[in-house]
Image 1 (spheres, rainbow, N blue to C red):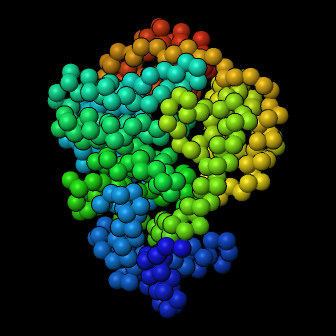
Image 2 (image 1 turned 135 degrees about the horizontal axis):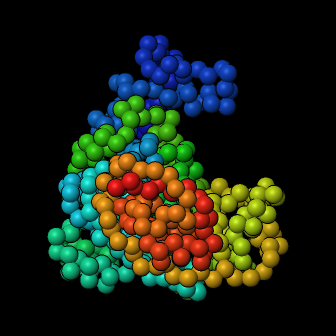
Image 3 (image 1 turned 90 degrees about the horizontal axis):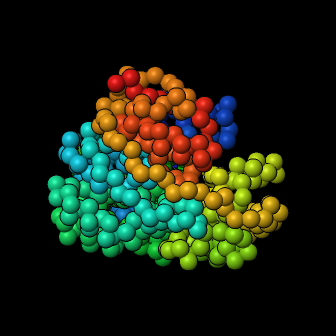
Amino acid sequence: MGPTPLYDALASFAGQSPLRMCMPGHKGKLPFAPRLEGAAALDFTELTPTGDLFAGDGPIRAAEDLWGEVFHMPRCLFLTGGSTQGIHSALTLACRPGERVLADRGCHRSVYHAMALLDLRPVYLPRPWLAEAGVMGAIQPETVDALLTAHTDIKTVCITSPTYYGILSDISALAETVHRHGGTLVIDGAHGAHLPFLGIDHLSCADLAVVSAHKTLPALGQTALLLAGKRYAHHDLRRVGSIYGTSSPSYALMASLDLCRGWMEGQGAADYRRTANDVARLRTHLPTLTEALGPLDPTRLTVFVPDGFAARQTLEGQGIFIEMADRGHLVCIPTCMDAPEDLTRLEDTLLALPAGGASPMPPPPPLPEQALSLREALFAPREVLPLSRCAGRISAQQIAPYPPGVPVVAPGERIGKKTVAYFREIGYNMEEDILASLL
């Protein structure tokens, strides 16, 4: 077990049985919820012994610095608002309101919301379509180079790696390309918090990166990290983090981040390597996405099935709940907390499913016309309409069926007849209510 300065400070202070005439109102006692009492005992507010997240000192800062060492990045800020808080903060650091930004078309909705809040104007970065797998591939450095050459005013590039399906882009090559153009590289690495513990240094070349500890590590929900390179000082991270985060961050959540890293530096890393080996074995027995199509997260299991939605229903009937299903895939997230017998149970159930590859999917259609800015679209008056009646209307939301796992329509884009035809072709629910702008 590695050092845990924040947890140790909180546990020591709680052990003194201090008289709590301050927040939080539970005063460290939840007798009506015994399974939460341990967490409540460590749930303090900003006091001299506990430190202050946005002051940047004390045991919280010590715990953050240890996480920075894990990712080989000099700055780290704890986040209790998930990667969403981190993405908003990172783009606020990297961009000035109103600027153009080169944005991965397949980025999380938090990126779209951040661009709307900052009134950023995206130039969308396409990914190659991997027809044999029915998913989007990695971001190519030459694509980034060509777009930055064509749009010399763009100085920020924001991409996602790993993707939901586990596909990794070459961050080192992308960083070299972006820096050659004098730009800043922001990585949404929400699904990659575990990679350093598998010996994979995936993010350290980025200028700003965000990871969700709770997604792939044994940390409580909402826990995440904002990581930064040398060009950003810790007070920069605290300043923007406090804009988008609560002024009363959960000490129980921050303690779980500290404990998580401490455990991962010992037994957790060994357990994660065991899981990676088990997933490698599963990939030889099941029809899955493999590294033949490019670098993958060693522990993400993307299984090809003829009908992902029916397969998910079958699995849930047997008490197995997966991360995501689409028309032709099941996405499972094995972690260090899955015992070998858990993965054997998963394998046996998957092998019993109807045989066949992923349902064939057409590539996504060309990008629609951008009729309004993201900010205008998200904050404009709107009405709710079935998608079948939206041809010619401007979307006030993302419409993102899986696959391809990227928005077919982004906020502010006009829904054309060809786009509606594509949705029909892939079997999308045409009567699903869509937010359409009245403008």
